[in-house]
Each structure stands twice: as structure tokens, then as C-alpha cells.
Image (cartoon, rainbow, N blue to C red; front, top):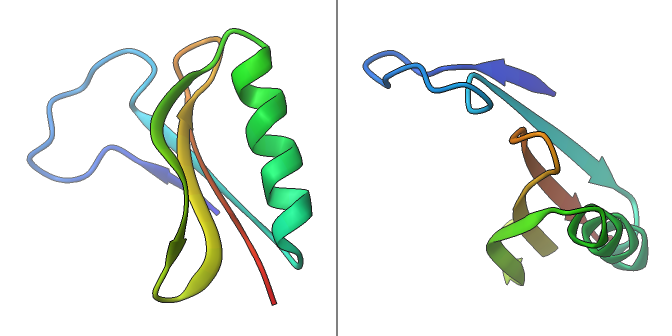
Length: 73
């Protein structure tokens, strides 16, 4: 899934696009999360369980693009 800036949210370079990627397993989500952090990413939300999925996090990647990474059965 990809979304643009929400109505009423000011445009800021790098935050105008958010990418969501959903994996079948928690391990896959954790792997991508760690890779995004390793490549000059910043943790916006730590990996945690959410009510809808076992693993969910938010990372601001190397070029300022926000990634939502989810995974689980």
C-alpha cells in the first residue's frame, strides 16, 4: 500500500509518501525492519505487537520516506 499526505497535513519533503509492506511472518517483518534501520534509517516506532497483527513498526528510511512494516500469521 502507498498513501500520500493526509488532508490537513502540511507537506514536508519525505513525508508526502508513506509505504506499507505486510509480510506473512513476523520474522520477515523484523528482517526488513532491521535492514531499514541499518541503512541510515531512524526508528519512528519500535517493533511491537498491535491488536491486528503480531509485529508492527514504523521506520523513517534513509531518504526520509516513512515505512510501515507489519507481519504475522
